[in-house]
Image (cartoon, rainbow, N blue to C red; front, side, top):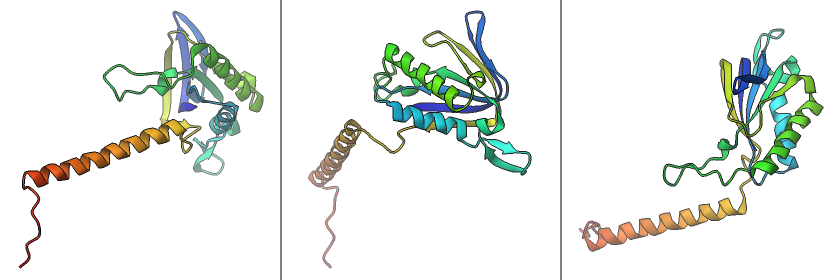
Length: 192
């Protein structure tokens, strides 16, 4: 699960001509859901976004002292499957890592509900899942963080892809040395 968190003075989501979600000071969350995400990813991210310290403390005079929940501020959640885009081949993004729409809608709704359970449903606003939305916000700071529930947990497929890439690099290096030897570019150290 990936979230782009922005500390905001205000934020809103418009669909067509209608504002479907808006908040005052708080955080705006662009929420991406992977096809591999589980309830553990959801729980981790819900606690992370509510607790991560992106606000200053006026009492202590310190920076990065409080989370959105500590401050009693609002949260705007916007579904954003494009956070799982891959653009390594060609110029068209590939979204196969994102969870399918029907399943993703249920997962997103459950995530929003979980935020409300941990914090307060009245403090949580959303966009409209699957709609063409216009998100407007005033970023405060600016403060923008990229959060990932699996930053250090790589799937077997990712490990296999990394191993294949490493093997290709080794072959390329070996090929380059063989080419240089056949062209006489590599000189043997002289024995003087």
